[in-house]
Length: 167
Figure 1 (cartoon, rainbow, N blue to C red):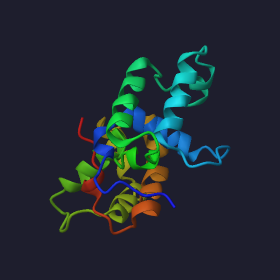
Figure 2 (figure 1 turned 45 degrees about the vertical axis):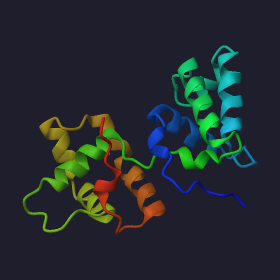
Figure 3 (figure 1 turned 30 degrees about the horizontal axis):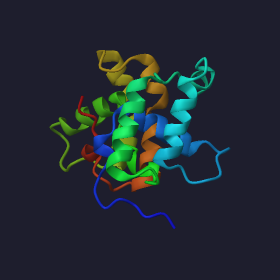
């Protein structure tokens, strides 16, 4: 049984490292639980190769600063800490813009939930935001899948504002 950290450690992780960890966790070929040590070994291996593996992982910018960040996390939380604790649960920039648009809508009577955001996307909000230049055309492609994944993880009634990306 994996023991989860009692504090929210994901807010101490860069978006790049969080995305890399999430990709490793979702890799179906890996059978053992992913720890900070195994993430470090993966990054170290990439730094010593010609980045061929990094190219398979959605062109992550694998560099020594990720290794430094991992070393600091390992020093603070131990190398056997479960890597899943360090994955940030935040929306992409595009989904954050959609959430903010809904939050700023004067017709919105209550704080929007993830379900409210999904309904707005399926009702054409993203197309409208493309028309106003708030979203790029290619950003629309993944919005529905992203909101569905958040709903699967946190439920349709979760407040959307809790997933906003502030950068």
